[in-house]
Each structure stands twice: as structure tokens, then as C-alpha cells.
Length: 632
Picture 1 (tube, rainbow, N blue to C red):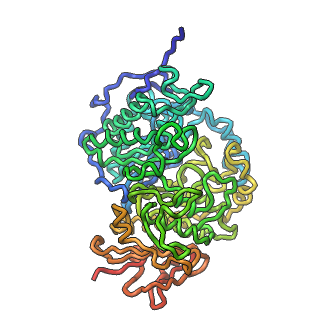
Picture 2 (spheres, one colour; picture 1 turned 135 degrees about the horizontal axis):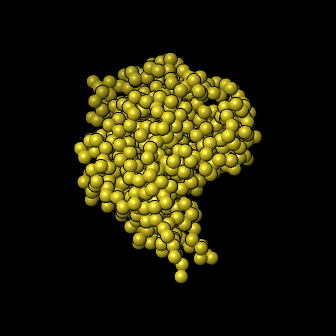
Picture 3 (cartoon, helix red, strand yellow; picture 1 turned 135 degrees about the vertical axis):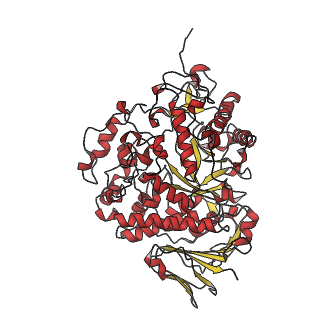
């Protein structure tokens, strides 16, 4: 006989470091922050209209010196409206950001809950050169015991993480989490939780309760870390947990990590359970629809992958757009492969981007670089269709996230070394514009609007605050040149990284960081004010979205997007967006009668030279310009 002492996987309360489960009444009024019972939420947002920023609770505020030291890196930081970090977040919400996506905030393994127990590097990391290996070495020595981890190693799926709480020992973390949600809602943002039900930290508590049931078994009979969500009780745990977060914490959306490892039916059951809650239809669902691993190709069940989720209204990340914009792929060994914004003028890249700008729709028809009229599903992406969604809101458009290099670092690997800081910033804005001005939901890693860097770290899940924190004081730079990234994930790329990190010209000046943030806010304001961005159906996209200069004569490195806004826009009848990734000014011979530069575009002096005239539309190098026609 084996006797096992174990915490409850359904725990909603825990002691510090998850040693004991607590019996907690989530309806206890002592666990509600002021105003919780009458919480006023921002208006619901249709999936195709969402603009989402992703951030780790710790990254957001651990470097914000305007906060009390104890509150940095915690839920409480979001409740301080006067802090530097929250002022910036509110400015994005005011411009058109609709959701804040929080990386895992459930109880996860690998981080001591109490700040006093968290190890720190024993050296001053700021004293080493920008291309040194010393920073990462010092961080690696304490990584298993410091205060940092992304959190994709679940322990208890339905209890707030203790290391993000001021008081981790007991139910106080429940009240602190709710206060964070209320504060973000008050700032105009709906809250999305990054949930990880597809695996656990090792066997966690589940296999110790019912051995061989909650986890998939290897051929030798051992339990792996992947959960068996095809089994009824594991599927039920997922549904029950999501419903608890939605009802007890008033969460507005969920992003499923490795959603393709779930059965499609399980995710649809989650959707059905939420739909039966008051206001539940306004709760959004999206996730990673990748197809790999032991379930690949439907080996065990019909998976919740990109193609399988078409028509469900549940979103998946559009890696087609990401790769065409940046260049290369997430798993490529060579980080220098170029895409649209980094200097690859290949015409098939144009086609992939156009499908992305049309919401990744399988049915969208347009003229390709060959002159043929084809559907999105007929454009190839590494042997799969570029277009796979049935409705634009099912496409989560992005060019960076916590995984892989953040956008600034990806561009650093790919752009010619001689590219100046102003042009790097303009290309960053251009890449973000391809997300903001596309049909479907837009998604960005928070800080990319400020040229945030992780010093070329491609997988910073355990790289500490030094590499991950958002630097809110632009005088500190953007994080580039913080040292070589961790050897265990990046050493094969150090020969590319060293000369880049040693180059001071790649650290943007403070004024450029601030100017880039304002350029991003301009993009958000333009999108928010024009309903033709974020159309609700495939039919509307086909009717209103076109690429009039497509075909074999299209200018390499330039895409012209034409939007018919008649009848739906309160100010404009037509909007034309010119994405110019070329290193020189472009003139696009499009009929320009009645068009003028969008009045919102004022932050970049160079962009003010964009104009509409008899020759067509003139747009400066490495820029995105929006032209409008006034209503008659």
C-alpha cells in the first residue's frame, strides 16, 4: 500500500509555496475589494475588433521605480493609477487597446512565494559589457530559486499565483487578484488569462491522486507532463476551472496554451459553458492551434488546431502573417532570414501578408503576384494553406509574443547592420501596422510599442528580471545590450548576437522610444475610429477589402490596401493604407482624387511628406501611410 499526502487540484486557496490547500468561500465578502459587487466593465468587444497586449505580471512593474518596492512585480501594481507603468497602459487603452492578456497568473511551480526567499544574482549585472556572457551566467546560477518564471508550469490551475501577491499565505491573494481585475477594467481594459491545462509541472498533484488517469502515458507506462484532456474528468477540470475564473474573478477572456493538445470538443464545451453564464457570450477564447507532439495529425482525437477551429468563433494565432512580416520561422536555426519588413521583396511573401490582412480567411479571393485570382486557402504556407479561418475574428494577428525573439530583437538579427535607429523604429511601426490594420484581432507583446528588447533572448522563460523587465525610464535604454542571452537556449546564436549587442547604435535614444510609442497610439486611434478595420464577416471583408495594385507588376516591398468604408464609417468613405518597406520613397499610381493624409498621422515628421497627387500616392521610405476620402 502507498499512502500519499497531496493538495487538492481543485484548490481555490493555498498557503505559501502551495504546501497546503485551504477551504475558502469565494463568496466571502472579506475577499472582495471595494466596489467588487458592482464592478463596471468596459463595453464588450467583438473578436474582430480586439486589440490585445500581452504581458507578465512581473515584467510589467518589477522595474517601475514609481511604485513602492514591495508592490513591484505584483497584482497590486495594477491598482496604482499614478504609476509610470499604469499611466502608459491607460494611454494605450485610451488610444484603442481593448484587452490586456496576462501570462500565467495561476499557482505555478518553480518560484518561492515570499520575496525574501527569492534568490538574486550575487553580482552587479550592470557592470559587465553589453556583449558579455557574465550576466546570463550569474542569472543561470540562481534561476531555480529566484523570483522569475513565465509560469507555464502549473501546480494548481484555479488559485492565483502566490509570488505575485503581497500576502501569499492564505486567501488574501484572492482579494489582490480581484482588485487587479477591477483596476484594469477601470482603466478601460478587459482582462484575458493565459491558461495552461495541456500540461503540468511534472506529474503535479493529479497523477498522485489517480495514477495513470490525468496524464498521457508513455509506451513504458510512465506518466508524462501532458494532461489527458481527452479523459472525462480532466476535461471537466478544465471546464470547471475556466468557469470559476469567469464567475469568481470576472475574467473577460482566456488564451489556451498549446490548444492543439486539447480535443476540439473540450474547447467547444468550454465555450458552451461560458455561453450559459450571464454575459458569458462576451468572454473571448483564443489559443495556440499548433499541431505537433503525441497528438499530431489527430492521432488520439480531433484536435483544437488552426484548421479544425475554423467556423467555431474561437481564435488561433496566425503564424503565417508573423513569418511573412519578419522572415523565417519560429523554429529556424538561422535567425537572419528576411521577410517583408526586413528586406525580402519576394512576391509570394506579399500574397501571404494579403491573406493575413484579410483576416486569414480561407475564402478570400484576390489577385496574386502571378496575376491569377485565387483564394486564401490556395496560398501555400510551408505545405499548409495560408488562409484557414471562416471569419476574420478567428485570426489572432501578431508579429511577436513572449515566445521567440521579441520584435525589436528579430529585426536586429535580420536588418542590415548599417540600418540607422530612426529606420529601425519606422520598420518596427510598419510591422505593428500590419497587425493593427489587418482584419481580425490584433496582438502585441507589451513594450514592443516602446522598442522593447530582451537582448536577443529567444526563450526568456527563466532569464530573470534583468532580461525580461520592461524598462519604463527611456534613459535606461530598451533592454538591448544587456549581455548575451542564456546559453542553454541561445548559445548556438551567440556568434550572430555578439557583434550586434556590442554595437551602441542599436540602442535607441530615449526620444525615439517615446516617439515610437506615440506612433503606435496613432495606429490604434486610426483603427478604433474606423469600423472598416475589424469587419465582422467573410462576406464583408470580400466586399470592402482589396489590393488594387496586385499582380505581376506590383512594386516589390510595397503593399497597397484599399478599404471601402461607405455606409459604416462616420467620417470617411474610403481609406487607403500604403505599407512601404523599401529603403526609398515610393509612388503608387493609384487614382488619388479626393484622398488626403489621415489627420491622425502627426508624430513622425518624415511621414508628413506623404501626399496624394496627380502621380498617385507618395510615401516615404520604411513607412506606413493612411489616406482618407471625406464623406460627401
